[in-house]
Image 1 (cartoon, rainbow, N blue to C red):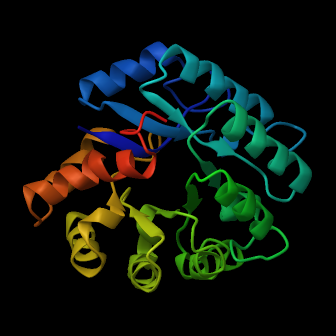
Image 2: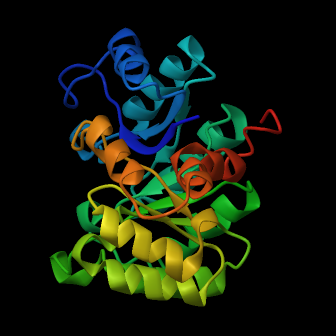
Length: 253
């Protein structure tokens, strides 16, 4: 079983292809991917600086393929009232599988008590995970994975998925994951050596495969897991078992 834990999907003109459910499912079938976790790309943000239309598109897409398209609600945390309403509407009512935030694109620190903590509190209450973009220390360091540690410490019951395993700062991502058990590492754009290193340091049960499609290529990112110097069982956990557990797919959410 393969479940892609980090992708983006938007209608035509609001994001890179694929832009239809039919085309998306073709890509899944070609790569033998059972399901994918997906959210709106930054290019789909509206003129009002919200992701309302993009999140609604994902809700409609999920209705067409409910067992295969597993959306996360994307929010702009600066718009606190809208963000909290979106989380309640799309997770609480429409049964989205979690929340996605992007500290670099939205220009906020993930450990900001004023901006990030209300989002984390709402996400914790709904018992779903939060996927966080992390990467190089650009835009004043908003996306540094080490900052996720403050959030993990403040919200110990919230599962936090560090997107891209921190990119070049993967060692920082691994270190902060060792400190906090509620942190999960996602593998997109990391090498087989780096992924295997993460497994040795924090355990295979806290690493999930992601491609960041359409910005990454699923077959390449899957091959990286296959090439890791880890056991076949650990590869299966990373490719699908772990994210299925985190999203409670076995429990029929």
